[in-house]
Amino acid sequence: MISLTSPVETRAHSWSAGLKLGVLCLSTLVLFSIDSLIIQSAFLLIILILYALPGPVFMRYGLSKLSILWPFILVVLVWHLWILELLQGCAIIIRMISAVALANLVTMTTKLTDMIDVVRFLTQPLQRFGLNPRILELSIALVIRMTPVLLNKGECLGMAWRARSTRRSGWRIILPFTLIALDDADHVAEALRARGGLTSSHPETRS
Amino acid sequence: MEKNIAYIALFAALIAALGLVPKITLAFGVPITAQSLGIMLCGTILGARRGGLAVLLFLLLVAIGLPLLSGGRGGLGVFVSASAGFLLAWPLAAFVTGLIVEKWRSGSLALVAGIASVIGCIIVMYMFGIIGMAIVLDKTLLQATGFITAFIPGDIIKAVIAGLLTAAVAKARPASVLSRPAQNHAG
Image (cartoon, rainbow over all chains, first blue to last red; front, side):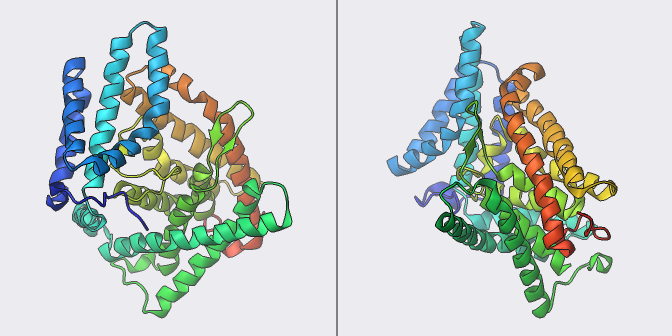
């Protein structure tokens, strides 16, 4: 499965994922505590420079990921035009773009494996409460493996529907699709048991 | 244990797969996606704990950079955007939905699952979503509510579908409806 990590290798790819996430948390907190339009704009400019430094391919890819914000930008703009407080609206929009762009920047420059290492580190304290880190890692791997499998089966269902009907399938194929997922889950559970099963620090949770 | 892990992981994958079902546009122009139907099904079929964990696992994968949200979205950015409150409420929404299905044993499963989806995945989820939107867009709760009311009819349609699907799954695969372990034959 393709992750959102940028294929363009940057210096930031080698930086510690934990450090990047820490800086991101702090920066987001600072962003949301500042109201000044000038400081917000300066923040956005710095982020845009960070996007531009690795080159045009990286920048285009990064900016394309911000397109999800258009509906919100439009709503805020129209609202603030209506109440005649356009400057305040601009500050809100710039802050939102900066926060999302900065978070996306961390995602784009951090490999999936480094992120999983951070998750493993952060969930270490939960071992005391019975969370087996191996189970979490296995669950992540299962979702990454099974999502394309399910998608492929969903496409087959869609094609089977189209071969028999001129109408759109809509929600009608969601029932067989859910049944496929349930059957797959049973097969996966059997396969896991056949390979020795999962050891749990909480035997009472076994089913 | 293996069955729990497999069901949680497969339902996280199901939420991802439902994100790729093409949007349906309602009569008044608001698009609805099937992904939140996946959240409802996690609660109604897996129950509170497993359903909440499946959604939590899905969000964890989104956070570490997989483009699993509808429209190929993902990464940390979605957790600070205006719709972040909705995303963060998803595990709780699935949990509440599952809890209602687990505890409310009388009546038809379709009806119970539909009402549970309305309470968990509309009322609870919109509460958090509206608070998140009010914070990010610097608006009052009332103004934020006004921005998203257009999506409520679509979600009510999905809650009805979730109820019908849960009852149909209970008939086809009674042992798989983990939210009703002792009574899963009662559709």
